[in-house]
Image (cartoon, rainbow, N blue to C red; front, side, top):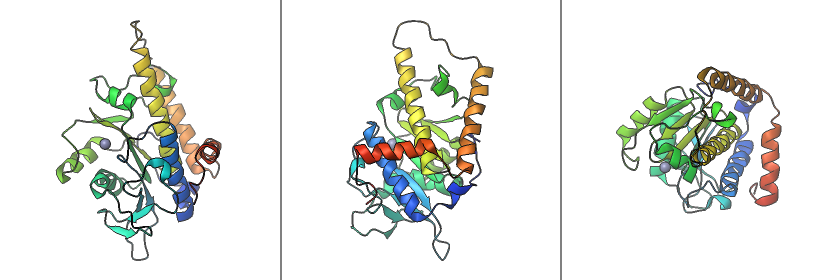
Length: 262
Ligand SMILES: [Zn+2]
């Protein structure tokens, strides 16, 4: 893998724009369904195939829309600076909010999707010096795979982007201290699955540490072994043309939040 640096190969890297739009709209819907959105803020971005002249293109949510209103057809296409290339409904984007995403996409060509959230559990874990502990199977998958970036204020300035990229390095999960989390995926599906597992890990840590009993983190070698097992499973999925877990998520979105494909 993995979770620390991966190659953009396999069928997923050859997805069509229509497939990427469908998956990204589903990603916004599932993040909303799980209560992991934060009003109209935070973003999930996806890289599109380059334009005819090699132009970099990315999809972003229309500004001002809640995540459960995002559809495949209302996603806005922007370049690496956040300038709009295609916006059929004229919604615009939060270009300032895209700056971190753009920096990650441009520095990390394997990052097809960048997913940033502010969830209560994610912010809570980002607010303690120890960060995420390997307390259970969910969190063991992130063992040795999480980078940390210290809070500097709302991340709008260009110099901080460079520090974020340097802190992320070749890893795929960034704990933004006192702020939230950011994950990179080789596909939208992979980013969503990582984000959901990270959220479960953070919730479980908050629960475990609130009991007043003695936390029992996994030994490093067991946690590392588990992380390797997860990484190989993610690699296998990304290299194949079948992802039953993502298909199940799409069906859930279809039932609970229909219309996302429009
Ligand atoms: Zn944020």
